[in-house]
Image (cartoon, rainbow, N blue to C red; front, side, top):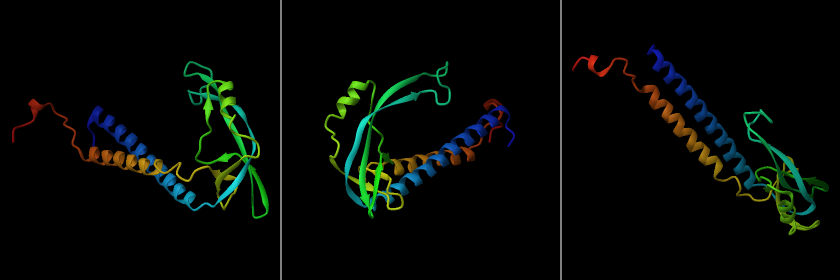
Length: 179
């Protein structure tokens, strides 16, 4: 398949779209499977052990902090720790698997968001039987991501397959003999 410059561009496009498609498909399968597992996790009435604000540096440039490729900013996130007992063992954790912490641009807004949360307050959580330190606050938080990523991946793989089978015209229209 030697089609010159456009053949190379097409190959790069097909490789890129195939990687995105396969990656999305695999991530979707993992998310879908994880969501199915969470549905069977037992619930328990946990207590709020601590509630505070944690400052987090957000880097918009990935691996290029504080340079021309992006900038860093400071966000203030809720940091809530829960305490509960499973099989006579106490767990104190803030490892929320699918729930992102609630974050704010300023510290006072983050502090005021915690005003309705008090130490000792009861909260129903769902914990992993294999590792009770892994918890979720809701069983339905990750339900849409898996199927969406699977569909997205299949669409991209389909596009790659369709483009792979398409012919690239290497001669201008006026040089193609009539049929």
